[in-house]
Length: 126
Image (cartoon, rainbow, N blue to C red):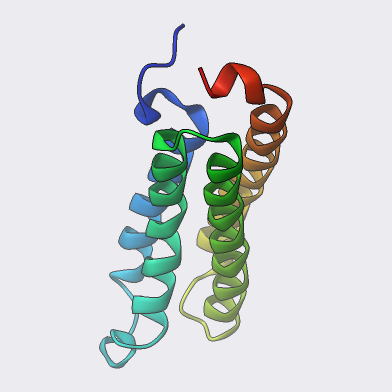
């Protein structure tokens, strides 16, 4: 399959799915957290597919790689926030484990995507 859009990327599709799941999970958080952890965790989640999309639209390999690295940083931030939410009792173990598994899979995908971007830099720039 030829990749014509960022929406064709598996890494984007999975991070988009994660973002939707994060929004669903945070709907149940305490209302007093709307400007706290709820807002922070949603922003980190949205940042992942957003930076993948922006990187896809960049011309140079250096720019592409930088946005994919930012996406990975947001993912790691999200992983930390999920631990906090679990420990505060905002996420039960089942919900936490499902989200953690998804973040771990996306982490592997992003790492592979960064590596393939660097290895195919001459192809990516044409």
